[in-house]
Structure formats: structure tokens, C-alpha cells
Length: 348
Picture 1 (cartoon, rainbow, N blue to C red):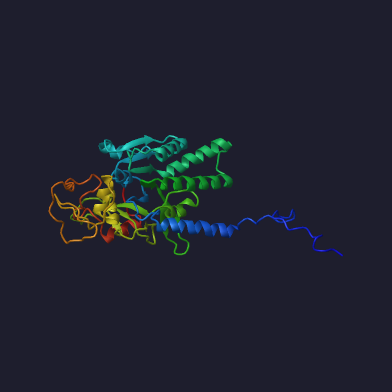
Picture 2 (spheres, helix red, strand yellow):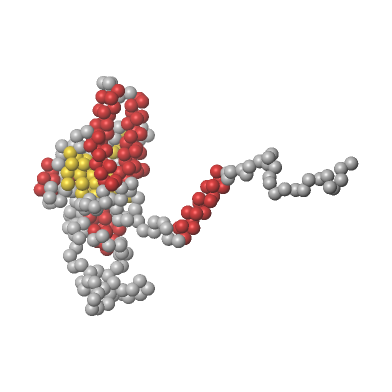
């Protein structure tokens, strides 16, 4: 019979048959990462302000003024996939234009913007994404030695367009995608619906990637109209006959073709001005009187106090990106203009 002396003293070394500690479950790891994110958020390591930049898709028929509208963007770089820059020949001093002859040219421009830290450009325009897609389709047919697109090639094209749109939207500058018009028939009501002119699913998916979708058209005056001026407008609200979108919820149904007015209505004049000067964005209530200094953050007087010695005066000259309000008759077109444009009555 074994006695106590025969028993071996316990050792601190684990038994060879002891199973190793099980790794953390995927859910446990996810919970830990979430907790770390929340802790960093409480310490202020998160985005608390939205920069005053707009990602926009604009579509319309040829000659309505899409490229001219693009030239009103601040410090624009225009990637011209089409030969349609003659309309801005008198604005070339303010617009940098790069000809996009092949789809590779567009990719090179995108890589440049990703690495550029000079803040030389505040906006980029792809004019047009419809033509850039056609250039990529030409590349696919050449590389596959096909005379026509196949179903697999259409799928590859859609995947590439999704990628390129996402990467442009990830840039910390204003982005404008210009499109031609695609007319689809609504089988439920039997009417024609205007959409961004893209091949395949991108025509329906494009509004999901951007903040604003606008349909640009013109209203030609009738013989009985006193004002014979052609009215150009951008419809940004969805209607039965055309796509539209305003993620900010601050734009009018019909907007004048001036990008500075878009910025002011969405972000406020003070925030746009601060962004153009490279200063932190202020709220709309920030003082803007000549010679006035900003009041302390904890005080909110009705009027800004007079300037004190050594105080930094507020600039008296408006930045270039802030345009004056539209004159009567040059702003949003009358509701009749929307009805005429939706019925296909726009003229180039």
C-alpha cells in the first residue's frame, strides 16, 4: 500500500498534457477594438467637424453649361476626357486643365492627387466620367481582343468604375463628376426618367457615392416672355422624371449654376471663407465686421467688441470662392422651368 512518503511532491511545471490557452474569439477581439475606439473618441481622437467640401455628380445634355459650372469651383483641376473646354477659354487663368487621352491618364492624375500635399487644388472635375468609362471599355476590348463587350467585361467595367469613384471621393477636396444623360423608361408609369449617363448599374448606383446629384438644363424664353434671357438651372431634388439628391438638405429645388452659392447655402459664408484662408472653420455666427476681433469662446455678445491693440483684424476682402448672391431672375428658375426641363424641353 502506498504511503504519503511514496507520493511525489507537486511541482510548479505544467503537465505535458495541459492544453494551451485558447485564443481570443473573433467576437472578443471585435469587442476589444470597439472599446478602444470608444475610448479614443472620448479623448477627442475622432472627427468632430465636417470639412466644407462637396462630392457632386452633375448630368445634362450637351451645351447646357456643365463645364462652365465646373469652372466656378475653387482652385479647380479639370481632367478633360472630352474635347469640350472651349466654353471656358476665357477662364483658363483660373482653371488647370489636363487632357485625359487614355484611361491610364485618369489613374495617373488620381495618384498625383493622393500624394499632393501642396494644397494647390481645392477641387477636381472629371469631365466626363461617362467618357472615362467608354475609354476603359475600349481598353478592355483591346486587351481581350474583342470587337464588342462581353458580360464578363461589363462586370469588370462596373467593378472598376466603383473603385475609381470611391477613390476620388476619398480625396479631401471638392469632387465633381460630370455625365451625359441616360434616358430610361419607367415601366410602371411609362415615362422617361433622366439619369447619369453611365453604362450598366452605375447609372443607378452613382447617387449613392456623392452628396449632391444635379440635373442641369436650360429654359429658353417663349415669344411672349418679356425677359428673353436663357435661364440655366440645376435641379437637385429627386423628381419623377429625373434623379436628384441633396444629402445636406439645405439646397433649393432649383439652383443657379454657381458652385460658390452651393457652398454658402450648405456650410455658411463664414465657414467657406475660413476654409479658403486655411484657417479653422468658424460657425455662421462668427463676427465678420471690419476691424473687429473675435470674442472669447465662452462669451457670446450680440455684437463684436471694437478692435483692441494687437488684435488680428478680420480680412475685409472676400475670398474668391464666395460669390455674391444671385440677382433677381438669375437665381433658381421658376417652377415652369422645371416642368419644361422634365418634359425634355431644354435647349442647348
